[in-house]
Image: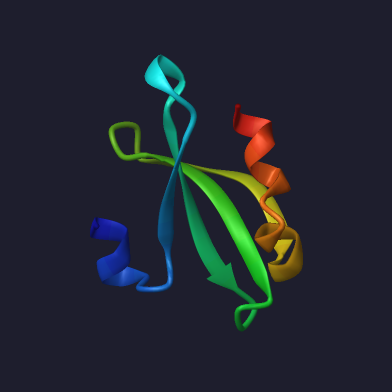
Length: 68
């Protein structure tokens, strides 16, 4: 929710199960043409870029298999 206050177009996507559960924060970029997939560690104050995808690639949801 803190991210959405500053970046209203950002969304958290919960992936995985149990101990492997993680949240990928997705930012719209380039006028909604691209998606920037990130992992954010608030405790460590780190942001890791996981992938940059086109809107079409992101919509296919194939990227989610990487985190199963």
